[in-house]
Length: 204
Ligand code: AMP
Image 1 (cartoon, helix red, strand yellow):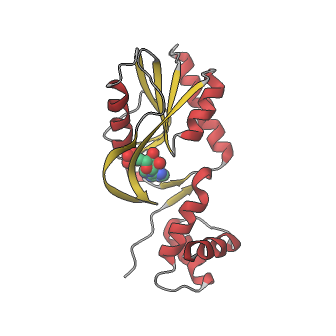
Image 2 (cartoon, helix red, strand yellow):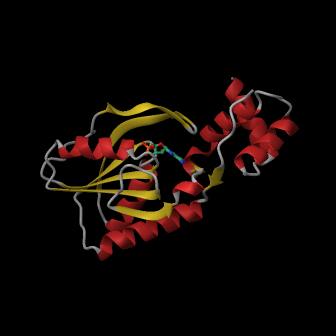
């Protein structure tokens, strides 16, 4: 029996823009200012870039914390797999990610940054799931634990769809069946052409 598909929520660029606006508004209202943003690879990169624009912070460095191997499949405990791409000692730093689910990635990342001796350290995520063991200082939207979904961010659309479509194809690989199973399992109505492309790319 194939694994059940996770319930999903397809996020649009419009929502992404609104989250960036909400988040930067909350940060500004608390009068927090930063020298450097740390964008967690890879989910935090677009959020960090959008906050950089809105908050007027020109320096972004990268840090790779890994936890979820493939779509909706956690891969053991989180670990730092690539160090900070630049120094943050004595800087006022905001660590940015897209979503806190278990919260392990952001917890690990902030611990790692704290050990480098920043002058000030905050964390932010677009979305924060209620059961997360780590609560970011700032977030745009809280998702209650009972409403857990896998959020398909626009920057991860094809990667997520390739994984989900391959999973949906395990029991019956016919395109119409895969489209239907995706709709029933994830709750998202993916265009047939996208599913066909994702399946073709996955098998390559
Ligand atoms: P976590 O360490 O569990 O807080 O999550 C680490 C990363 O996995 C997040 O930054 C996301 O990129 C990804 N992720 C975890 N849960 C979800 C979810 N429910 N929807 C979309 N991406 C997720």
